[in-house]
Image (cartoon, rainbow, N blue to C red; front, top):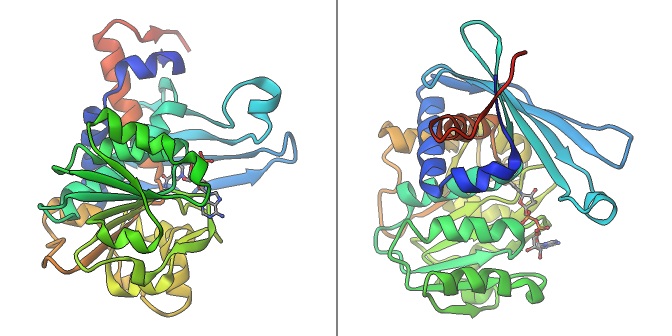
Length: 321
Ligand code: NAD
């Protein structure tokens, strides 16, 4: 079995490799060649932690395994380590033997960024020039960096409930040589692509803050009760998801479906647009919205890619089990 420690991931995994792995596994999911197992998430009654497992099997890529981990809210203050902690375990699908153990913290950020990036590649207008950010926390910087590679963007605009955090994304824009403007929610009408990545439980972005032709990647809502955008926006949009069951259960679509504004059958797997079995965007004034809830197969895909990179570079540690 191979071990790839967390400390090695930054030097191994590229945004390009994460993009390729996530795009491929979304396509395999839509083709019926890969599926996620039911998610387990438990408040364990110790250290205020939420702990769980996200697993799956990608028959096309021959990747089997799970990500174990969760959220320890006191880690930073008490142990000086980040609150989100996860590890990916891969198994040989032919024998069930353990194949790899991989640090999952940075990989989670990269696979989440890759997901919105894949949605932009396949659904945003080709002439998109302005990208708008709702959210400016840890994950926002990853989402923006990956998104900027997908179109010839000329400007970044952003809104955040806590404006003092906006310099986080301004820095990413500056790295890419792009101007940044802090805007009101109304100002987001200037955006051709919008990424929402907040931990909000009430909508910030309303349907009339979004112009026709916009592509949205809604990435923050990954739990029951969370919500970033007005449910009416989903009724105005063609809605895509990484996994439809998760989108309806814990994603942004949970609210629009519960309110009867859209039906589960209206949601399209992003993989169908990748595979060409769904046309994706069909007009320049259509609003497309990707509900990215984060699936286990994304974690397995990037972990599998990084194990190969680590073996090729002689960095992976081999142990007998
Ligand atoms: P963070 O704590 O670094 O940032 C939180 C962001 O949410 C900040 O921009 C903050 O200003 C904003 N925010 C907080 N409360 C808000 C409110 N009430 N209304 C509007 N905005 C508010 O967190 P992060 O690591 O950047 O993660 C952001 C979200 O993304 C979390 O909800 C996390 O669970 C989710 N996430 C989703 C996936 C996925 O695959 N879909 C993966 C990783 C993280």
